[in-house]
Image (cartoon, rainbow, N blue to C red; front, side):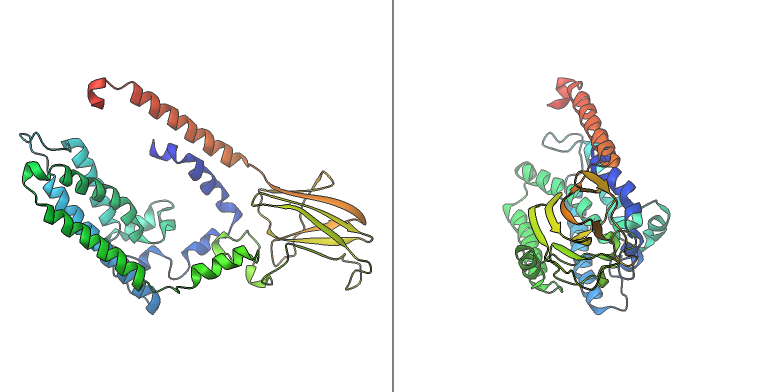
Length: 332
């Protein structure tokens, strides 16, 4: 059921891997074997970050264990908020998440299909956080019945607050990264992507930085420069739709600040055309005839996205039917 509910994402993620250089997601420094808790490689910045992640993971594992023990179901306890089934499920999830962060689980990372693309085993902290939050919440609910002091809860919250503060102030990455990226977006300069999500056949390092949205160059048989002026009118430029009008007195080539993924459909004067490939980059390049050309580029819904949406919608319907069919007593 969980996989079905995530179908709107899983189906495209599985199918569209063939569009990109996905294997580069496992380049050196990004492999699971290099990112287990307290793993060390020949990269000081990587080791510094992994140490912070490892310390945080250990803290969450320890606190989860403590609060799981405090919530251990007792048959005679009427104040116990977690029944045996829920408690056992959360404990099993906690043990699994913690195990997958340790080097001894490497055989699973190598054998299980696609698990290696999680890249960083410490990312299982996001899963461990679910039982962690439930166990703490349950302990707070029953603290009066069991005699827990408010001071203990305050101490836990203080530890979490101090950990969060440390992580924000002492992370190794450049503090200017986000402001620089935001400025580039606001100035319409674009930003450099990552290798593993480049379309096949593209090397974005060969593309000039800060390109114009639309560039018109001479055709392959023309001189180095266009002999007559070109009129370019960009009528719309959104995330999923680019619309423009190009007027030229001689054949030309249109180059967009856009990479050619299979979901982009290019139309010139309402006729679908296939973008040309330069052999080095996957920049969308379209030949234009002399005259006025209306160019429309749209990101269409491919079959994998539709199938994923249907799987998700079906799973939601099944979940609602299962919930509605439960006896009222089990919902109380």
